[in-house]
Image (cartoon, rainbow, N blue to C red):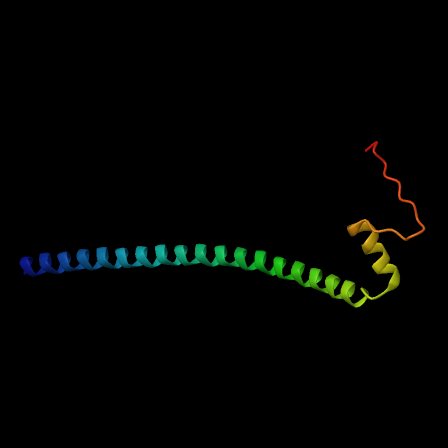
Length: 97
């Protein structure tokens, strides 16, 4: 009887240790997965903000393209970006800057 009780106690201890190890493994895995989910959420938020910024830039560029045929806009672009001037116009450059 005493031998059977000792074997039963050993089984109980081994079972308790295995159960504790299994619970610890699941908790560690859960914490690891939660950290990965948080990291992915941060990446998703960053990408979403970048996406919204690109959509706004595209809308602005589409507006510029649609208005690009205007005479005033073409004159402005020619003056500002390419340094062109009208034939009867004198251009003065400020060298003080």
